[in-house]
Image (cartoon, rainbow, N blue to C red):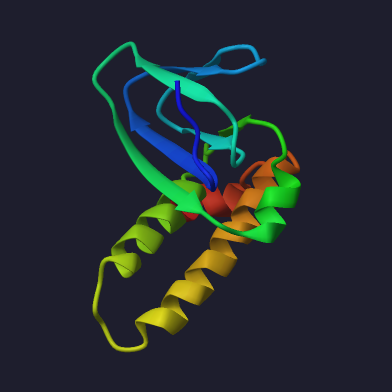
Length: 130
């Protein structure tokens, strides 16, 4: 078991993971789900299959206030995974105005996480665009 000093966001693209969370019920994940783990939350991951995931550690006061307990989120529309992938790509890139683009993408990531945290599901239009 371990913990991180920052909020942890994991978006699952393939496979299945059981996340053991200190003091919580085990969280089951599969493709199309995301797991948000608050800073300092003790946890351990157990892969039940081969898997692929996007993994981000975020230091963000707004998200830290919203996610005070671990949450499994549905990313049915794929929006969270898309934005998270763009954040990772921009973070490791060197294109002009990288910092500005990264700031905008992190704002979008925050909005998507707020919506998913509030239980909003993707609209038909969003599913159509995907």
